[in-house]
Amino acid sequence: MCGIAGRVAPTRLTDDRRDAALTRMRNRGPDGNGGYAATRLDGSALDLLHSRLSIVDLDHRSNQPFVKGGLSLVYNGEIYNYPELREELSRLGHGFTTTGDTEVLLEAWRAWGLDALDRLVGMFAFAIYDEGTGRLVLARDRFGEKPLYTMTGPDGAFCFASEIKVLPVLAGKVPGFDRLHLRRYLVNGYKGLMRDGRTFFDGVRELPAAHAMILDPGGQPMLHRYWTLSYQPQDMTEGEAQDRVDAVMTKAVERVLRADVPIALRLSGGIDSNVVAGLAHHRLGADITCFSIIEDDWRYDESAMIAEGLKGLNVPNRQIRIPKENFVERLEDMIAYFDGPPLTISYYLHYLVSEAIHRDGFKVSLGGTGADEVFSGYYDHYLFWLAEMAGRDDFEALVEEWRGTYGNFVRNPFLQDPHRFVKNPDARDHIFLGAESFAGFLRDPFDEPHQELTLCDALLRNRMLNELTRETVPVMLHDDDLAGMRWSVENRAPYLDRDLVTCLFSIPSRHLVRGGLPKYLLRRAGRGLVSGKILDNPRKQGINAPVTSFVDFKDKAVRERLLDDGPFFDIVDRAKFEALLGSDVARNSESKFLFSLLATRLFLDNHSALEKV
Image 1 (cartoon, rainbow, N blue to C red):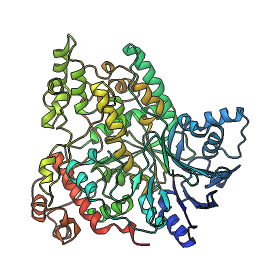
Image 2 (image 1 turned 180 degrees about the horizontal axis):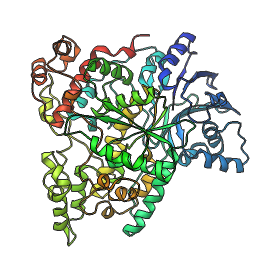
Image 3 (image 1 turned 30 degrees about the vertical axis):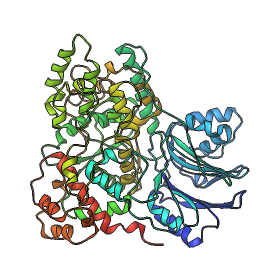
Image 4 (image 1 turned 120 degrees about the vertical axis):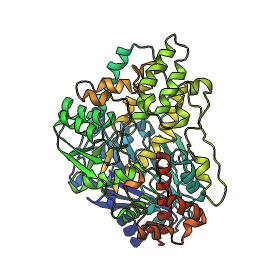
């Protein structure tokens, strides 16, 4: 994991702005930094910057920018299949002076150009420059695990960086806030944020996942999509499906264990992280250390299940209890680094865990991001699955299984009818739950309905594809990255392995649920590695907590801080906000909304990272 940045402009980047940019990149790469400068064939100036977090091949020989044979590379991420690619490239006559993945990426580009992208298994955002042609190419991994933002300066300079805070230094201007994006965040929540590449700042855009951007001398940037996930079910039995999943799941975990530094794992009481831990420790013999958040609120307390998982693992475990003191100060620090409010309440907890991981000397952390979207684990997924099974003779028996298991834990009122999507396949009012009420807190009207793209004909898989590419996974990866990199920790997501995801989207949906339990194939993959009490638990669990676990809203200093004058009240009605602070926030949706209000308040007041340059 590293930080990258660059600029194509009429003039060279000055030394002071170069140094300021590298300073803002330091958390992403505390182990070294460097720059590369060139004049392109059209006379424009190119600057590439890099800050390194050394994880594979720790020697300085792998420092970047990595320059070799007319190619210059700055790269953030990990190419997990670099040993296999290195062997293939060696047979083709390519030579290597390092033992890591950076040089493999450069030589893969030399051998295959844009076609190299589909050969890469991993997470990445990189820029590679060919001095012979003057072509600069930016690329981002399939799901957007590694971030890359772009912005244009007043002089037409094209700027890019791993984090938004670097862009004003490169561009020479500070962007204003995107008020539409802020309203989306407050009213519709995180699932409404990733539909069009916008950010919380005007003119700052994300490079789309699974795309490359090509910048030829004298030309306009061109986008190239190199990969598309689709649902292509193959005829197979449940046993055949399970064999395939077991094989690719083990390989996915083996890949993310490739590192020259110790590995940490964020362990909750749920299936996802426990299966990764079981595979890593028991099947692959990895030496891991687990870190867990402990929440006192009984609705979110996972301590019993975490203890159950640890019984079988017998590995070190660091437990972090949620502190109530200094919440506002912690959230301000988080917002300054995130260049915006955290997109979900869970990532405040992730931030706390990452801090503990960092303080114990770890640079790499594994987690369960993407498992629900790949194996089908959300409450609405089960109902979409039931709707697809509606023609089966045993349909009513399947409904009764749901009532006796997953259906017992559904709190969203729109999802308490098992026939919900049988009656109305297009119903999506459960997704922006509470939006009408939350919009009432704004000073100006706001109503932006949920938009779902048609990406395949299967009801469940279409929902999952939207979540993987446009809704939940992009949001989680955004906050995963920043919560870790605030503390110089690289997060890895084995469930987003290319081969694993492709495999799951070749399996007929009927195999995803059995015996009243979703994520059936994942539960089976964990047999013999994870406690049956975890694998057979029908309650969906994961890292979460109510906002009242973080802050006491009766505290006078806290209330005065939050109700003081500020730009926040240009957007939000003060009286309604004050009333919410004094109310008993019981529902999960209300807790999330209140957290979003607090984060927006602090973001608009104190975004220190984008000071004028």
